[in-house]
Amino acid sequence: AGLIHMIPANWGVNARDMDALWPGFDFPGKLQLLGKAFFQTPKYGWRSVAAWFKRTNVVIAGCGVDLFDQPYERQTQCILSRVVDRSEAYDVVGRCLAGVPVGGVDSRSAADG
Image (tube, rainbow, N blue to C red; front, top):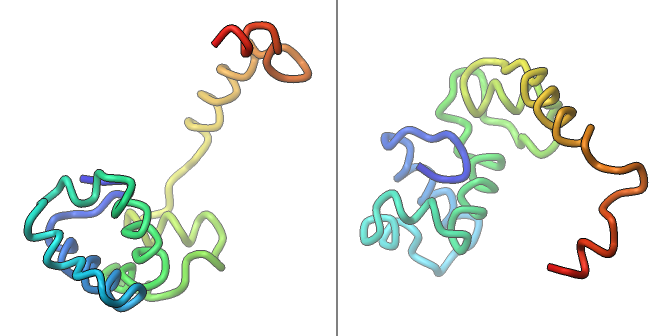
């Protein structure tokens, strides 16, 4: 529903984990009020991702680690419950960047808005 793949069964766990990391904001109450929109707002969405990386990933069998310190393969395993091949995303980005001039964006076009 939000910035990270999370099934609705884990929403409450994640909101409680957010409360543990940032006490005093009543994230479970805000989740109850906003539903899935809670995870789609930058105000709460990014904290939700951080809480998943720090704590909520415990809902995935074999996880329950601080994902900020883990390699990509372990991160994806503890987000999607399986390792994800990133070659497709890499290829998409490569095709996009192939059209960018060496040295970055043309400053004249950037100045034009």
